[in-house]
Image (tube, rainbow, N blue to C red; front, side, top):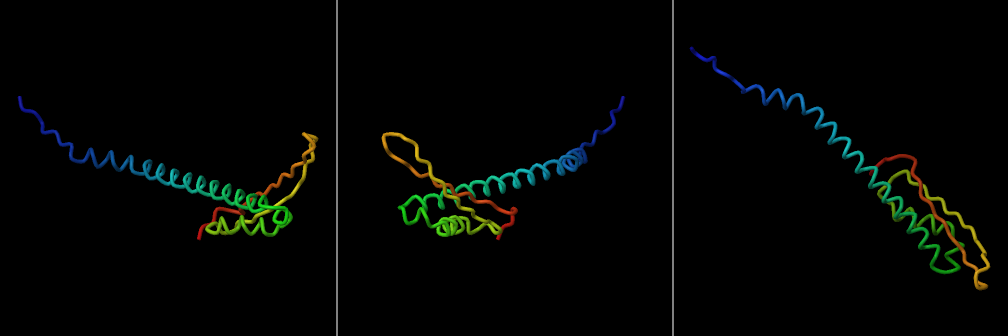
Length: 114
């Protein structure tokens, strides 16, 4: 009884050819997710920079343009980013102190990179 020779030389190539598109899709999806995550962190940091600029003293608290510029400077690598600073004050009756809250938000029109 003679056995037929078993050739598995093309099996590994076929498995790779079938899995390569799936692996490439996963790689592209992961890189896109990392790009979106980076943009979210950069925008949060820009909003924080604008709010920190406005919280320095009463003069900078009224400088809306300065808050917007601080946010834009912090996110200089994101093109199409617009910063909107808004100011509102609350006066709760807590031990006869009033506090002001400043809010700076940063938004982008789309994920375009330089």
